[in-house]
Length: 380
Image (cartoon, rainbow, N blue to C red):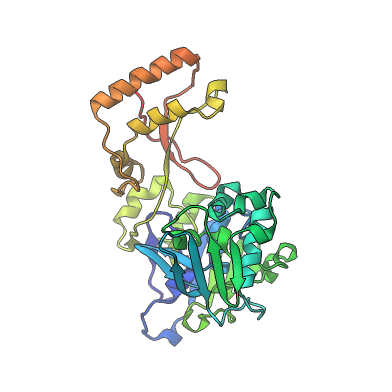
């Protein structure tokens, strides 16, 4: 295979369609047009409003929404235009006229209206569904307190009209989240190979050790989707999966399909094939509660404030993710005086509440199903 090998440093959610739609026109038809990659071996649940984080890599290849979040803003996907009022409370999304599901059925503004209402009513993903609660009466509808007519989502011809209860200047970015994807009503009962999709790929085969995606010929931009097929090997061990890349068994290792093993980060940094992209990745300060202390079992505002005060984004970027990543939000480097003061307040809180923990706080990156090993302490 002569497709250029690619490698990503950090997990990033992106569409294979974008990768497939490169402007490179060198002997396109002579290429094999198959991408070989790898994902963790597990059971995948392919429903865009009811999924685990590990499912998201596949979901974003099979379904898409109104927009896609890109560096510096959004890319219009299933819309041709977005308009909003000066106070950012009223939004209008003008859908493409040529949108269809993979079975040929049309996708309309009404399709989106019904899908959003369905997610509000029945999606169990509260950690994602809360994003929809900025819509007028959306939260009340999810609690069966108002009718769907009272929710700030209307469809007029091919225009989706949304009314928010609070100004959100970047609501066009919010709707790029999978919880805002359209839902086909038949998908809950269909097996993976039968799923009705609206993005660049569909599931051709889902086996115990391999998933094969193939081009969705009904996709609105199928003419620009160069990849005909994506073959995804399923490998349980992350080190074994990573080693498939230097053995030329796969063309691509990295996000969104597989996170780079912590043990291979330094080696990965030296590879000439490495590509680095600015992404949003969260690190957490965690206090182990192996002793099941009641105080640590419940959320405590003061404790969170102390942990935040002594957090060090610069250190996280250099040591934890090892690529000098900047902080998403402005956060000063903690001074020695602040650390000492926080330590004193922490010890006073500990004496007052009589809580204990079995280890020091540490920073970890969260995988979809487990914590990365602890790397460093923050509270003296």
